[in-house]
Length: 393
Image (cartoon, rainbow, N blue to C red; front, side):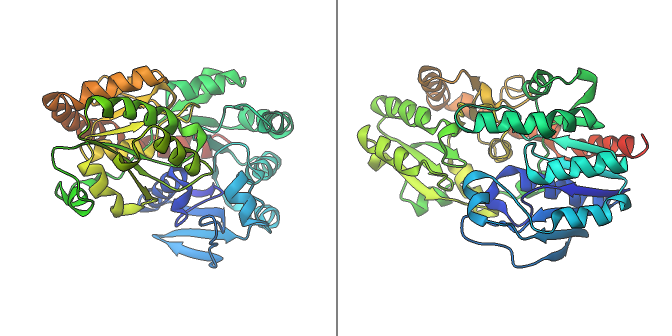
């Protein structure tokens, strides 16, 4: 098949989190299976840097990096306006058998939807947690987008992909029937976690005692990530168990100063380590030396790649219902809790105060990834979905 992926951020734009990593992994595995994959994306890298390359062939993937009108708008407001995108799509859309759209409310998706509809090219949509309209000033903007493009885009798709049952319900809230929704979990490259660094390297680097209980957060430092809940829950645990640390890893997405002030107010500044963003193999020593990984977003964002990576490193996890991991509780690999300080604090105590339970959860976490989230399992489903779409016309 000739496959087109449309996504606003792609390799090596790792600062944009999980979606570019997932899209890249799907693309290169489809190439490995003999398909021709083209990616239309933008030139974003991070807050300040752009990709100067306009075309690349990475692992057999043909990638076109179109310049954004504004890198500031892209980074700060997730508004991607790639120059030349419409022209490129118009000239080439009929050369593809199937299109895979990533995220939901983006300018490239709207344009691609219109041209795909006109040319009768089937497309798949993966929302990656972007369906809820949330609150605030962006809500009416999202409603207008849905009236103009969103509803048509969803109903015109061959299939839409949901990571979890909750995301499937979000699609249904927007009017889709269940038979239009394909439930496919995220995939993870487990081979990257087979030769893990020995435990202790991170602790030694930062002077942490081997007996200290280390709670890890890794993700964007944003209001919606619920980091304030985790900080408060950790502060309560620290009063009970002073030999503990909170490690916060991630890029500032406008909320770092708030969290730093909260840490100071709660008197845990000396027990909190802010590392900034880490990518690739640099994350592994931190995952390995954490006693528990915790993620408590207040808004639904579906499965987190960071949570899966922590599990693959043998670290038990605590997540709120807003970022549930299919199979986590079934495999006894961690705990899913309600999004409140008390529930989060109770979960921290349960895991950190029971060494035997924590070790068992770590082993079960790796097993969960091996059996449910490895790419060989996931990519079979995606390939069948692409083939179904390509042969539907």
